[in-house]
Length: 231
Image (cartoon, rainbow, N blue to C red):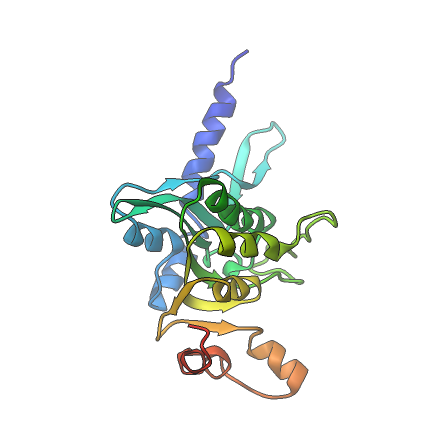
């Protein structure tokens, strides 16, 4: 049996995963003064020590002959790395895809980050910029799929990681929903002063629910969280 086509597809998926949300989305992200998750990881870990886990996870589209046409990678980048020679697990949301709102594969990888940190007894570093699930979807990608009813509780792995390994987190952009919960559930957390907000919900939700117009900074900027102890 010849597996060349399958091997070629794996290689192609790896290439496409590096495109993240595409050139336009990356340029827009840079224009706001923020790095992509891959750039952040590259700057954090020792040179050439990042070993990515699951880069080919995601949703693939095929033509009528079964050939790969396009690939949407999981919007959570995860892997092993080293900081000052010490091995860690590091991961974070890819904001250039769906605004960091998790795809099904991205959500699973975010949970897996905690699971492998626990398994290998390694410090866990999370670099957050993302939100929770989106009912209507973002960037035209459709709604997020819920977990099956028999899925483990989302915060079980978060709590297990906290009780097993050192956990450090950073808010580097808007962080809401489950990523915000993960940021709080850490032994050490920081946020960038100019670009980050930590929110239960964004201005649109607050305006609809409370009838109050608030900016992201008013809801969850550094002035709020350096006083309340979140960071």
